Image (cartoon, rainbow, N blue to C red; front, side):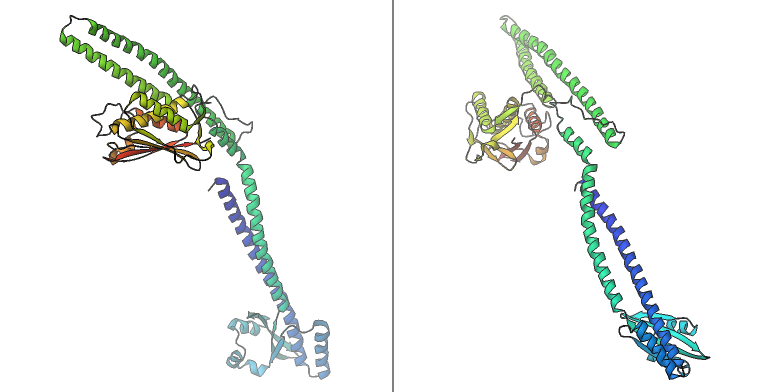
Length: 454
C-alpha cells in the first residue's frame, strides 16, 4: 500500500472518529433535551390534574380540566393515577400497583418531581398539596413526536456519517496527492538517472523544507557515485593498458627463447611454461577487465533497438566459429506474433557476449551434446531458454555460480576461470533483466533469461 493511500485512510479513520463522537454527542444532547421538554409538559398536566382532584367544588374542578383541554391538550396515551393519603402509607401495595424504582418514590416523598422512562413511555410523579391536603399524582404518556424526531435524527446522522466519510477520503486522497507531488517528482528524476547519465542532478527548490533536504542528499550521493565511477573508470582504462604491455613483452620473450635452437631442454620447457601461463594471464586479465567494465561503463556503450531472434542467430554463428562441432539448435516455434515483443533496448556487443558465454558453456560442459535455444515472449519480457544435457550443477552450488572466480566442484577437467557467468549476469542486470537457473547433476542445465522489451 502506498504511503499516500495509507495517509488518506488514517486521516479518514481519525476524522470518522471525530464525526462519530460529535454525532453521538448531538444525538444524546437532542434526546435529553426532547425528553426533558416532554417530562415538563407531562408534569404541568399532572399538576393540573392533582389540583383539580383536590377541589371540593365541582365547578372549580371542571375549570381546571377546561384549561387543560383548551390550552394544553392531551398527550398520546396520556394517563393519570391519583394516590390519596391513606394509600401512600401502603408503600408495598403501592409498589406492586405501580412498579417503579425505589428512587422514584424517594423523590416523591422528598416533595420533588419524580421522572422515569421505560419502553418508550415517560412517567412522572408529583406530590400535590392544597388546603393542607396532600395527594400523589402518577402520570404517563408516550412522546410519539419526540420518538419520531429522534428516529429521523438518527437516520440523518448515520447517512451524514457515511456521506462525510466518502468526502473525507476523497479530499484526503486529493490532499495526499498534492503533498506527495514533490516526492513523486524526485522518484521520477531518480529513476531516470543511471550509469548513462550520472552527471544529472535533482532540481532543488528554494524552500527550506524536508523535500529540499532530500533532494540535496540525493545530489550529494550522486556526486560521490560519479567520483567513484570516474576513479574506477580511470583505473580500468589505465590497468588495461599497463597490464597488456608487460604481458606482450613476456609472451614475446618466451617465443624468442623457444626460437633458439641450441638451448637446453629444461630451458625450453621453462619458456613453454612462461608462454602458456602468459596467455592464461592475458585471457584472465581481459576477462577481469570486461567484468569490471560491465559494473559501471554504460556511458561509453551505444544502446540501440535489438531483435533478440537476430541476436541469437548471431550467437549461433559465433559458436560455429569457435566450436565447429556444436549441436546448438534454435527453436522459433513460439515466437510471438507481435514482432515488437522481440525488440529490446540494449547494447548488441554486450548482449551477444552474454548469450555467447551461456551457449558456449552449455556446449563445453555437455561435451558437445545437443543444446536447445527457445525464444518466446511474456507480458512484459522476451524470454530466452538455453537448455543442455551436460554435467549439471550441484544444488548446493547453484547460488554461487554468479560469484566471480567460483567454479562448480564437478568441473575440474574443464578449462575455465569462473568469469563468464558473472560477466553474463552483470550484462543482463545492466539491461534490467534477470537470469533463472535450473539444473540437475548428470541431467543438464537450463538458463532462462528475461529481458524487458521496449
